[in-house]
Length: 484
Image (tube, rainbow, N blue to C red; front, side):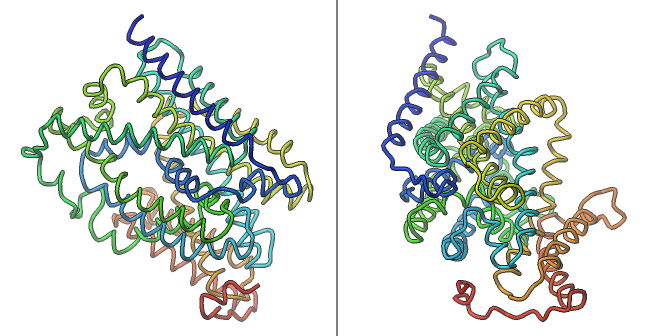
Protein backbone atom coordinates (compact mmCIF):
# COMPACT_ATOMS: atom_id res chain seq x y z
CA UNK A 1 0.00 0.00 0.00
CA UNK A 2 1.39 3.42 -0.98
CA UNK A 3 2.06 6.16 1.57
CA UNK A 4 -0.77 8.23 0.10
CA UNK A 5 -3.22 5.37 0.54
CA UNK A 6 -2.11 4.88 4.15
CA UNK A 7 -2.57 8.61 4.82
CA UNK A 8 -6.01 8.53 3.25
CA UNK A 9 -7.03 5.43 5.22
CA UNK A 10 -5.92 6.96 8.53
CA UNK A 11 -7.67 10.21 7.61
CA UNK A 12 -10.97 8.41 6.92
CA UNK A 13 -10.76 6.30 10.09
CA UNK A 14 -10.03 9.26 12.38
CA UNK A 15 -12.75 11.41 10.77
CA UNK A 16 -15.28 8.57 11.04
CA UNK A 17 -14.36 8.02 14.69
CA UNK A 18 -15.07 11.66 15.53
CA UNK A 19 -18.37 11.46 13.66
CA UNK A 20 -19.30 8.33 15.57
CA UNK A 21 -18.44 9.84 18.94
CA UNK A 22 -20.52 12.91 18.09
CA UNK A 23 -23.52 10.74 17.17
CA UNK A 24 -23.27 8.72 20.38
CA UNK A 25 -23.04 11.88 22.49
CA UNK A 26 -25.98 13.61 20.82
CA UNK A 27 -28.45 10.78 20.34
CA UNK A 28 -29.22 10.38 24.04
CA UNK A 29 -29.93 14.06 24.62
CA UNK A 30 -33.51 15.08 25.35
CA UNK A 31 -34.92 17.52 22.84
CA UNK A 32 -37.27 20.36 23.63
CA UNK A 33 -39.87 20.06 20.88
CA UNK A 34 -41.86 22.98 22.34
CA UNK A 35 -39.07 25.44 21.64
CA UNK A 36 -37.69 24.61 18.22
CA UNK A 37 -35.49 27.71 17.96
CA UNK A 38 -33.83 27.06 21.30
CA UNK A 39 -33.37 23.37 20.53
CA UNK A 40 -31.98 23.76 17.01
CA UNK A 41 -29.95 26.93 17.38
CA UNK A 42 -29.03 26.87 21.10
CA UNK A 43 -28.80 23.11 21.68
CA UNK A 44 -31.78 23.31 24.02
CA UNK A 45 -29.64 25.37 26.41
CA UNK A 46 -27.82 22.17 27.28
CA UNK A 47 -24.16 22.81 26.44
CA UNK A 48 -21.83 22.35 29.40
CA UNK A 49 -18.87 24.70 29.78
CA UNK A 50 -16.56 22.10 28.22
CA UNK A 51 -18.47 22.14 24.92
CA UNK A 52 -18.89 25.92 25.01
CA UNK A 53 -15.12 26.33 25.32
CA UNK A 54 -14.35 23.67 22.72
CA UNK A 55 -16.78 25.02 20.16
CA UNK A 56 -15.69 28.65 20.58
CA UNK A 57 -12.04 27.67 20.24
CA UNK A 58 -12.34 25.59 17.09
CA UNK A 59 -14.92 27.81 15.41
CA UNK A 60 -12.30 30.55 15.51
CA UNK A 61 -9.29 28.37 14.72
CA UNK A 62 -9.21 27.45 11.03
CA UNK A 63 -6.72 26.52 8.33
CA UNK A 64 -6.72 30.16 7.20
CA UNK A 65 -5.48 31.18 10.63
CA UNK A 66 -2.81 28.48 10.95
CA UNK A 67 -1.50 28.99 7.43
CA UNK A 68 -1.98 32.76 7.22
CA UNK A 69 -0.55 33.81 10.58
CA UNK A 70 2.43 31.46 10.33
CA UNK A 71 2.92 32.81 6.81
CA UNK A 72 3.91 36.18 8.28
CA UNK A 73 6.86 34.40 9.91
CA UNK A 74 7.07 36.86 12.80
CA UNK A 75 6.27 36.93 16.51
CA UNK A 76 4.37 40.20 16.28
CA UNK A 77 1.17 38.52 15.09
CA UNK A 78 0.78 36.86 18.49
CA UNK A 79 -0.87 40.09 19.69
CA UNK A 80 -4.03 39.17 17.81
CA UNK A 81 -4.39 36.10 20.01
CA UNK A 82 -3.44 37.82 23.25
CA UNK A 83 -5.82 40.69 22.56
CA UNK A 84 -8.57 38.13 21.89
CA UNK A 85 -8.42 37.23 25.58
CA UNK A 86 -9.68 40.72 26.41
CA UNK A 87 -12.49 40.26 23.89
CA UNK A 88 -13.48 36.97 25.54
CA UNK A 89 -13.49 38.57 28.99
CA UNK A 90 -15.75 41.34 27.69
CA UNK A 91 -18.04 38.69 26.21
CA UNK A 92 -18.20 36.86 29.54
CA UNK A 93 -18.65 39.84 31.84
CA UNK A 94 -20.59 42.32 29.68
CA UNK A 95 -22.46 40.66 26.82
CA UNK A 96 -23.40 37.22 28.19
CA UNK A 97 -25.42 38.54 31.17
CA UNK A 98 -27.34 40.83 28.81
CA UNK A 99 -28.00 38.12 26.20
CA UNK A 100 -29.31 35.75 28.89
CA UNK A 101 -31.40 38.44 30.59
CA UNK A 102 -33.14 39.19 27.30
CA UNK A 103 -33.31 35.46 26.39
CA UNK A 104 -31.72 36.07 23.00
CA UNK A 105 -31.43 33.41 20.31
CA UNK A 106 -29.34 35.69 18.09
CA UNK A 107 -27.14 38.62 19.05
CA UNK A 108 -29.27 40.88 16.90
CA UNK A 109 -32.33 40.04 18.98
CA UNK A 110 -30.76 42.22 21.66
CA UNK A 111 -30.96 45.18 19.26
CA UNK A 112 -34.65 44.55 18.65
CA UNK A 113 -35.38 44.52 22.37
CA UNK A 114 -33.26 47.54 23.21
CA UNK A 115 -34.51 49.68 20.31
CA UNK A 116 -38.04 48.20 20.37
CA UNK A 117 -37.91 47.71 16.61
CA UNK A 118 -37.76 44.52 14.56
CA UNK A 119 -36.35 46.23 11.46
CA UNK A 120 -32.98 47.02 13.04
CA UNK A 121 -32.66 43.36 13.98
CA UNK A 122 -33.41 42.30 10.42
CA UNK A 123 -30.97 44.79 8.88
CA UNK A 124 -28.01 43.82 11.06
CA UNK A 125 -28.94 40.13 10.99
CA UNK A 126 -29.05 40.36 7.20
CA UNK A 127 -25.58 41.91 7.09
CA UNK A 128 -24.17 39.13 9.28
CA UNK A 129 -25.98 36.54 7.13
CA UNK A 130 -24.57 37.92 3.87
CA UNK A 131 -21.07 38.07 5.34
CA UNK A 132 -21.24 34.38 6.25
CA UNK A 133 -22.81 33.35 2.94
CA UNK A 134 -20.63 35.31 0.52
CA UNK A 135 -17.30 35.64 2.36
CA UNK A 136 -16.52 33.22 5.14
CA UNK A 137 -18.24 29.99 4.09
CA UNK A 138 -16.90 29.72 0.52
CA UNK A 139 -13.44 30.92 1.63
CA UNK A 140 -13.22 28.24 4.33
CA UNK A 141 -14.35 25.45 2.01
CA UNK A 142 -12.00 26.59 -0.76
CA UNK A 143 -8.94 26.84 1.48
CA UNK A 144 -9.70 23.50 3.10
CA UNK A 145 -10.16 21.75 -0.24
CA UNK A 146 -6.93 23.24 -1.55
CA UNK A 147 -5.04 22.09 1.55
CA UNK A 148 -6.37 18.52 1.22
CA UNK A 149 -5.55 18.42 -2.48
CA UNK A 150 -1.99 19.59 -1.82
CA UNK A 151 -1.43 17.42 1.23
CA UNK A 152 -2.43 14.13 -0.41
CA UNK A 153 -0.97 15.12 -3.79
CA UNK A 154 -3.99 13.56 -5.48
CA UNK A 155 -5.22 14.30 -8.97
CA UNK A 156 -8.80 15.01 -7.88
CA UNK A 157 -10.55 18.21 -9.01
CA UNK A 158 -10.69 20.73 -6.20
CA UNK A 159 -14.46 21.10 -6.63
CA UNK A 160 -14.97 17.42 -5.75
CA UNK A 161 -13.15 17.89 -2.46
CA UNK A 162 -15.04 21.12 -1.79
CA UNK A 163 -18.29 19.24 -2.44
CA UNK A 164 -17.41 16.67 0.22
CA UNK A 165 -16.58 19.37 2.78
CA UNK A 166 -19.79 21.27 2.05
CA UNK A 167 -22.01 18.19 2.24
CA UNK A 168 -20.47 16.78 5.42
CA UNK A 169 -20.68 20.19 7.09
CA UNK A 170 -24.30 20.54 6.01
CA UNK A 171 -25.14 17.10 7.45
CA UNK A 172 -23.68 18.07 10.84
CA UNK A 173 -25.45 21.43 10.88
CA UNK A 174 -28.84 20.19 9.61
CA UNK A 175 -29.39 16.86 11.34
CA UNK A 176 -27.83 17.77 14.67
CA UNK A 177 -28.27 21.52 14.93
CA UNK A 178 -25.93 23.42 17.24
CA UNK A 179 -25.69 20.47 19.63
CA UNK A 180 -23.95 18.25 17.06
CA UNK A 181 -21.86 21.17 15.80
CA UNK A 182 -20.59 22.05 19.28
CA UNK A 183 -19.90 18.45 20.29
CA UNK A 184 -18.00 17.70 17.07
CA UNK A 185 -16.12 21.00 17.45
CA UNK A 186 -14.92 19.94 20.90
CA UNK A 187 -13.78 16.48 19.85
CA UNK A 188 -12.15 17.95 16.75
CA UNK A 189 -10.58 20.65 18.90
CA UNK A 190 -8.67 18.12 20.97
CA UNK A 191 -7.28 16.63 17.76
CA UNK A 192 -6.46 19.96 16.08
CA UNK A 193 -4.78 21.51 19.12
CA UNK A 194 -2.87 18.30 19.83
CA UNK A 195 -1.49 18.05 16.31
CA UNK A 196 -0.73 21.79 16.14
CA UNK A 197 1.22 21.61 19.41
CA UNK A 198 3.13 18.61 18.02
CA UNK A 199 4.12 20.72 15.00
CA UNK A 200 5.47 23.39 17.38
CA UNK A 201 7.51 20.81 19.31
CA UNK A 202 8.92 19.25 16.14
CA UNK A 203 9.81 22.70 14.82
CA UNK A 204 11.66 23.67 18.00
CA UNK A 205 13.63 20.43 18.02
CA UNK A 206 14.49 20.95 14.35
CA UNK A 207 16.50 24.08 15.30
CA UNK A 208 17.58 22.79 18.76
CA UNK A 209 15.61 25.64 20.35
CA UNK A 210 18.16 28.05 18.86
CA UNK A 211 16.64 31.21 17.36
CA UNK A 212 19.97 32.82 16.52
CA UNK A 213 20.26 34.11 12.98
CA UNK A 214 16.62 35.17 12.80
CA UNK A 215 16.34 38.96 12.28
CA UNK A 216 15.32 40.88 15.38
CA UNK A 217 12.26 42.33 13.64
CA UNK A 218 10.95 38.78 13.26
CA UNK A 219 11.16 38.13 17.00
CA UNK A 220 10.06 41.47 18.46
CA UNK A 221 6.70 42.13 20.05
CA UNK A 222 7.01 45.89 19.46
CA UNK A 223 6.01 46.69 15.89
CA UNK A 224 7.24 49.86 14.24
CA UNK A 225 5.23 52.09 11.92
CA UNK A 226 5.99 49.96 8.85
CA UNK A 227 5.13 46.61 10.45
CA UNK A 228 1.81 44.77 9.93
CA UNK A 229 0.86 45.67 13.50
CA UNK A 230 2.37 48.94 14.82
CA UNK A 231 2.48 48.90 18.62
CA UNK A 232 0.26 51.98 18.84
CA UNK A 233 -2.65 50.04 17.35
CA UNK A 234 -2.80 48.00 20.56
CA UNK A 235 -3.89 51.19 22.31
CA UNK A 236 -6.40 52.39 19.70
CA UNK A 237 -8.58 50.13 17.58
CA UNK A 238 -7.44 46.64 18.61
CA UNK A 239 -9.71 46.42 21.63
CA UNK A 240 -12.75 47.43 19.57
CA UNK A 241 -12.00 44.84 16.89
CA UNK A 242 -11.92 42.17 19.60
CA UNK A 243 -15.07 43.50 21.23
CA UNK A 244 -16.93 43.32 17.94
CA UNK A 245 -15.70 39.85 16.97
CA UNK A 246 -16.14 38.09 20.30
CA UNK A 247 -19.08 40.05 21.70
CA UNK A 248 -21.47 40.57 18.78
CA UNK A 249 -20.50 37.92 16.19
CA UNK A 250 -23.36 35.40 16.05
CA UNK A 251 -21.06 32.53 15.03
CA UNK A 252 -19.05 32.90 18.25
CA UNK A 253 -21.59 34.11 20.79
CA UNK A 254 -24.19 31.50 19.78
CA UNK A 255 -22.08 28.90 21.60
CA UNK A 256 -21.98 30.97 24.76
CA UNK A 257 -25.75 31.50 24.64
CA UNK A 258 -26.36 27.73 24.49
CA UNK A 259 -25.35 26.93 28.07
CA UNK A 260 -27.95 26.23 30.80
CA UNK A 261 -27.22 29.51 32.59
CA UNK A 262 -24.93 32.53 32.74
CA UNK A 263 -22.42 30.94 35.12
CA UNK A 264 -21.93 27.86 32.91
CA UNK A 265 -21.57 30.05 29.83
CA UNK A 266 -18.99 32.24 31.56
CA UNK A 267 -16.99 29.19 32.67
CA UNK A 268 -16.86 28.05 29.05
CA UNK A 269 -15.74 31.45 27.79
CA UNK A 270 -13.07 31.75 30.48
CA UNK A 271 -11.82 28.26 29.59
CA UNK A 272 -11.61 29.35 25.94
CA UNK A 273 -9.62 32.39 27.10
CA UNK A 274 -7.16 30.18 28.97
CA UNK A 275 -6.68 28.03 25.84
CA UNK A 276 -6.15 31.25 23.91
CA UNK A 277 -3.33 32.26 26.27
CA UNK A 278 -1.64 28.91 26.86
CA UNK A 279 -1.92 27.08 23.53
CA UNK A 280 -2.96 29.21 20.57
CA UNK A 281 -0.19 31.86 20.47
CA UNK A 282 2.56 29.27 19.99
CA UNK A 283 0.81 27.30 17.26
CA UNK A 284 0.15 30.36 15.08
CA UNK A 285 3.64 31.92 15.15
CA UNK A 286 6.37 29.46 16.20
CA UNK A 287 6.26 27.17 13.12
CA UNK A 288 6.41 30.22 10.86
CA UNK A 289 9.40 31.73 12.69
CA UNK A 290 11.26 28.41 12.65
CA UNK A 291 10.51 28.01 8.94
CA UNK A 292 12.18 31.37 8.34
CA UNK A 293 15.39 30.05 9.84
CA UNK A 294 15.13 26.80 7.90
CA UNK A 295 13.90 28.04 4.52
CA UNK A 296 13.98 31.84 4.49
CA UNK A 297 11.09 34.14 3.62
CA UNK A 298 8.59 31.77 1.97
CA UNK A 299 5.34 33.41 3.10
CA UNK A 300 2.16 31.34 3.21
CA UNK A 301 4.04 28.20 2.18
CA UNK A 302 5.75 28.18 5.61
CA UNK A 303 3.27 26.04 7.54
CA UNK A 304 2.73 23.43 4.86
CA UNK A 305 6.48 23.17 4.18
CA UNK A 306 7.46 22.64 7.80
CA UNK A 307 4.67 20.14 8.39
CA UNK A 308 5.60 18.20 5.27
CA UNK A 309 9.28 18.05 6.22
CA UNK A 310 8.98 17.34 9.94
CA UNK A 311 5.77 15.38 10.45
CA UNK A 312 6.39 11.60 10.57
CA UNK A 313 4.77 9.86 7.62
CA UNK A 314 2.59 7.66 9.79
CA UNK A 315 1.11 10.75 11.44
CA UNK A 316 0.38 12.68 8.26
CA UNK A 317 -3.05 11.08 7.91
CA UNK A 318 -3.94 12.13 11.46
CA UNK A 319 -2.72 15.66 10.73
CA UNK A 320 -4.85 15.74 7.58
CA UNK A 321 -7.86 14.65 9.66
CA UNK A 322 -7.11 17.47 12.12
CA UNK A 323 -6.96 20.08 9.36
CA UNK A 324 -10.18 18.73 7.82
CA UNK A 325 -11.75 18.92 11.28
CA UNK A 326 -10.73 22.58 11.55
CA UNK A 327 -12.33 23.32 8.18
CA UNK A 328 -15.54 21.41 8.95
CA UNK A 329 -15.90 22.91 12.41
CA UNK A 330 -15.60 26.45 11.10
CA UNK A 331 -17.86 25.76 8.13
CA UNK A 332 -20.70 24.03 9.97
CA UNK A 333 -20.58 26.69 12.68
CA UNK A 334 -20.94 29.44 10.08
CA UNK A 335 -23.74 27.47 8.43
CA UNK A 336 -25.69 26.98 11.63
CA UNK A 337 -25.35 30.60 12.71
CA UNK A 338 -26.31 31.91 9.26
CA UNK A 339 -29.40 29.72 9.32
CA UNK A 340 -30.29 31.04 12.78
CA UNK A 341 -29.97 34.62 11.56
CA UNK A 342 -32.29 34.04 8.61
CA UNK A 343 -34.92 31.99 10.45
CA UNK A 344 -35.08 34.09 13.62
CA UNK A 345 -34.30 37.59 12.37
CA UNK A 346 -35.95 37.64 8.96
CA UNK A 347 -38.33 34.76 8.20
CA UNK A 348 -40.19 34.74 11.51
CA UNK A 349 -40.44 38.54 11.52
CA UNK A 350 -41.76 39.02 7.99
CA UNK A 351 -43.00 35.75 6.51
CA UNK A 352 -44.17 33.19 9.06
CA UNK A 353 -44.28 33.71 12.82
CA UNK A 354 -44.23 30.02 13.80
CA UNK A 355 -42.60 28.01 11.01
CA UNK A 356 -41.42 24.43 11.20
CA UNK A 357 -37.87 25.36 12.21
CA UNK A 358 -36.33 22.01 11.34
CA UNK A 359 -37.88 21.94 7.86
CA UNK A 360 -37.15 25.61 7.12
CA UNK A 361 -33.57 25.24 8.35
CA UNK A 362 -33.15 22.35 5.95
CA UNK A 363 -34.10 24.54 2.99
CA UNK A 364 -31.81 27.37 4.15
CA UNK A 365 -28.94 24.96 4.77
CA UNK A 366 -29.38 23.49 1.29
CA UNK A 367 -29.44 26.94 -0.31
CA UNK A 368 -26.35 28.10 1.54
CA UNK A 369 -24.49 24.90 0.67
CA UNK A 370 -25.25 25.34 -3.03
CA UNK A 371 -24.21 29.01 -2.87
CA UNK A 372 -20.94 28.05 -1.20
CA UNK A 373 -20.10 25.60 -3.99
CA UNK A 374 -21.06 28.14 -6.66
CA UNK A 375 -18.66 30.69 -5.17
CA UNK A 376 -15.69 28.33 -4.70
CA UNK A 377 -14.51 28.78 -8.35
CA UNK A 378 -14.57 32.56 -7.86
CA UNK A 379 -12.24 32.26 -4.87
CA UNK A 380 -10.15 29.75 -6.78
CA UNK A 381 -9.52 32.09 -9.70
CA UNK A 382 -8.87 35.49 -8.18
CA UNK A 383 -7.08 36.15 -4.90
CA UNK A 384 -7.71 39.85 -5.36
CA UNK A 385 -11.43 39.24 -4.97
CA UNK A 386 -10.80 37.54 -1.62
CA UNK A 387 -8.80 40.50 -0.40
CA UNK A 388 -11.43 42.93 -1.62
CA UNK A 389 -14.27 41.01 0.06
CA UNK A 390 -12.39 40.88 3.35
CA UNK A 391 -11.81 44.62 3.14
CA UNK A 392 -15.47 45.20 2.40
CA UNK A 393 -16.43 43.04 5.39
CA UNK A 394 -14.19 45.20 7.56
CA UNK A 395 -16.38 48.17 6.72
CA UNK A 396 -19.16 46.78 8.90
CA UNK A 397 -17.41 46.01 12.18
CA UNK A 398 -17.26 49.44 13.82
CA UNK A 399 -20.64 50.71 12.51
CA UNK A 400 -22.36 47.58 13.85
CA UNK A 401 -20.51 47.70 17.17
CA UNK A 402 -21.52 51.36 17.55
CA UNK A 403 -25.24 50.58 17.59
CA UNK A 404 -24.72 47.80 20.13
CA UNK A 405 -22.93 50.33 22.34
CA UNK A 406 -25.63 52.97 21.84
CA UNK A 407 -28.34 50.42 22.53
CA UNK A 408 -26.72 49.28 25.78
CA UNK A 409 -25.66 52.66 27.14
CA UNK A 410 -28.64 54.79 26.15
CA UNK A 411 -32.42 54.59 26.07
CA UNK A 412 -35.07 56.31 23.96
CA UNK A 413 -32.98 56.08 20.77
CA UNK A 414 -34.92 55.81 17.51
CA UNK A 415 -33.97 52.69 15.52
CA UNK A 416 -33.86 54.78 12.33
CA UNK A 417 -31.03 56.84 13.83
CA UNK A 418 -29.09 53.67 14.58
CA UNK A 419 -29.58 52.24 11.08
CA UNK A 420 -28.53 55.58 9.56
CA UNK A 421 -25.41 55.52 11.76
CA UNK A 422 -24.43 52.16 10.28
CA UNK A 423 -24.74 53.56 6.75
CA UNK A 424 -22.79 56.66 7.78
CA UNK A 425 -20.05 54.51 9.33
CA UNK A 426 -19.65 52.38 6.21
CA UNK A 427 -19.27 55.49 4.06
CA UNK A 428 -16.88 57.15 6.51
CA UNK A 429 -14.59 54.14 6.92
CA UNK A 430 -14.63 53.44 3.20
CA UNK A 431 -13.73 57.02 2.36
CA UNK A 432 -10.73 56.84 4.70
CA UNK A 433 -9.38 53.43 3.72
CA UNK A 434 -9.96 52.95 -0.02
CA UNK A 435 -7.21 54.43 -2.17
CA UNK A 436 -9.62 55.67 -4.82
CA UNK A 437 -11.38 57.89 -2.28
CA UNK A 438 -10.51 61.63 -2.25
CA UNK A 439 -10.34 61.36 1.58
CA UNK A 440 -7.96 58.38 1.54
CA UNK A 441 -5.38 58.44 4.33
CA UNK A 442 -2.24 56.41 4.92
CA UNK A 443 -3.06 56.09 8.64
CA UNK A 444 -3.12 52.42 9.68
CA UNK A 445 -6.62 51.01 9.32
CA UNK A 446 -6.74 49.90 12.98
CA UNK A 447 -6.23 53.52 14.07
CA UNK A 448 -9.28 54.42 12.00
CA UNK A 449 -11.45 51.94 13.91
CA UNK A 450 -12.08 54.12 17.00
CA UNK A 451 -12.51 57.18 14.77
CA UNK A 452 -15.28 55.39 12.91
CA UNK A 453 -16.80 53.95 16.08
CA UNK A 454 -17.10 57.20 18.02
CA UNK A 455 -18.22 59.08 14.93
CA UNK A 456 -21.06 56.58 14.48
CA UNK A 457 -22.10 56.87 18.12
CA UNK A 458 -22.13 60.67 17.89
CA UNK A 459 -24.00 60.58 14.56
CA UNK A 460 -26.71 58.29 15.98
CA UNK A 461 -27.25 60.45 19.08
CA UNK A 462 -27.29 63.73 17.13
CA UNK A 463 -29.66 62.36 14.50
CA UNK A 464 -31.89 60.95 17.24
CA UNK A 465 -32.24 64.39 18.79
CA UNK A 466 -32.36 66.76 15.85
CA UNK A 467 -33.94 64.63 13.10
CA UNK A 468 -36.32 62.43 15.11
CA UNK A 469 -36.95 64.71 18.09
CA UNK A 470 -36.11 62.05 20.66
CA UNK A 471 -34.45 62.97 23.95
CA UNK A 472 -31.66 60.46 24.52
CA UNK A 473 -31.35 59.25 28.10
CA UNK A 474 -28.27 57.74 29.73
CA UNK A 475 -28.98 54.21 30.93
CA UNK A 476 -27.00 54.84 34.10
CA UNK A 477 -25.46 51.90 35.90
CA UNK A 478 -24.78 48.73 33.93
CA UNK A 479 -27.45 46.98 36.00
CA UNK A 480 -29.97 49.34 34.40
CA UNK A 481 -29.28 47.73 31.04
CA UNK A 482 -30.61 44.46 32.43
CA UNK A 483 -33.97 46.00 33.25
CA UNK A 484 -36.71 45.40 30.73
